[in-house]
Structures are given as structure tokens and as C-alpha cells.
Image (cartoon, rainbow, N blue to C red; front, side, top):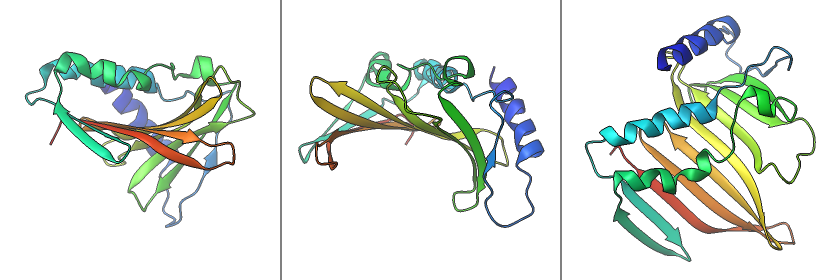
Length: 194
């Protein structure tokens, strides 16, 4: 599976992203031809590797300006990271809601696939945006970034989820205020490669 994803992205990179121009160019892709990167499958594959970790993962939580850290058992990692896979991200279920664009971001030395809403999203869909960062030389996923919006009673929360391939994951939860401002209420980071 890893090889298939690798060759898929190498093909995409060589076919669509070889650009001799020094500027980053955004290319819109016709939605009938788009196959979204299978983020959920990728993350589940990453989680399968947790059992073979040699080190004990470190879990750091910052809440109300207090930092707490502790070592986590490998079997508890998936429960901490459940928000990364709670919405299935693939072409078949999100093609009607999102468009894909890609560009060679020379400032980060990555090919970035950005998925943005086509129209107003239903409240039942918490996912609002996501990016996949690919290393051009290897065709491997470097990072996945997602934004979710969750309503609980009268409050609206935004989650910013960042997955660093084979290294760590971070969930930052913000409370959105009625006046349009927001504040971080919780920041969680799980590190499994130091």
C-alpha cells in the first residue's frame, strides 16, 4: 500500500508539478478527474506502526497556561489521536464539497495539496479544510494539516490537527467567541520519535 501511494505521488509530481519557473503556481484541477489523497487510510497506516515503536511516546497537554506531560502506553495512542480519523477523507465522500489545488511551495520545499470548500459546508460535516505536504524528492507525505469545526451546545470550537509523518501529532482546540475572536483552550502534542 505504501509503495502504491509512493508511486502515485511520484507520478503526480512528475506529471503536474515539474515547474522550471521559480514562482509557485496554483493549478486548479477538474473535479471529475480528481482523486483526493486518501488521508484517513494514510493516517491509519501510520497508526499501525505504533505497536513497533521502540520508545515510549510523550504526551504534552497545555491547558489554562498549565503544561502537563506524561509518558503514554502505545495502546492508548489511538484514543488520543481519534480526531484525526473521525471523518473519512477520500474522493468518494467529499468530492461534492471540496476542490483540490496543488502548488510547489519553495519556501517549505514541499508540494502542497490543498483542499478547500466549494460551497458552504453542512453543519454535520466538521471538516473545513486540509492540506497534504509531499517531499518532492521522495514523493512521501511529510505532513497533514486539517481544520475541523465542532458545535457543542451553544459553543463552536475549531480544531487544528497537524500530523508530522513518523514523528508526532498535535491537536490545538480553540473556542470561537460570538464577537469573532477565538482563544486556545487546549493544546495537545503526542511525540513518538525524538
